[in-house]
Amino acid sequence: MPHKDIFVTIIVGIFTGLVWVSVFLRLETFESILGFKEAAWVLVLVVPVIYVFGLYLGDWLSRKWLFFKSFAKYVMVGFLNTGVDFAVFNLLMSMTGIVKGPAVSSFKTVSFVVAVTNSYFWNKYWAFEAGASTENKSKEFIKFIVVNIIGAFLNVGITSGVIFFVTLKYLIRGQSFTLPQNQ
Image (cartoon, rainbow, N blue to C red; front, side, top):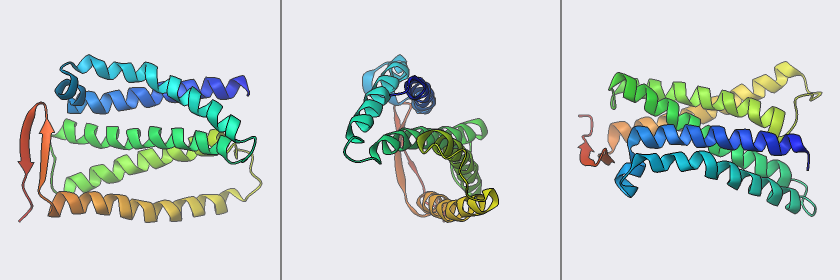
């Protein structure tokens, strides 16, 4: 296994841990579960270890099924991107104090675009190592945009539907509250 892959896996793991720490600290998830918020910082150490294990597992499985090495990297990038999406979305809501209404759909759109852009570069240049692909770059980009516009409509649509039409019960900062439906 190339040392570059191990190094990049550790970097991706640290970055994933940091992104998820920001989400969990903002929502005070670990504080409500374990009683102290500092426990979230363990993710910065644990996630890279899990990722390196996953990389080695993918490498071992790729001896029989070739796709597993790229698949292991793809899964890591997926967890990173989900964290980026959640982090940006929660940061925008936290900074503005807006947790319902049309602005939340805008926040979700921004967080989705940031996460998808992050995903594109990590997957292209690391997970699938297609940085020097021979495909026409504009054709590749158009495919990317079309697929992600569909994904954006689904992602933002589902989030907006939940926010506008479902009564949600939240536990944030140790307090339970219900987000009322829009009338």
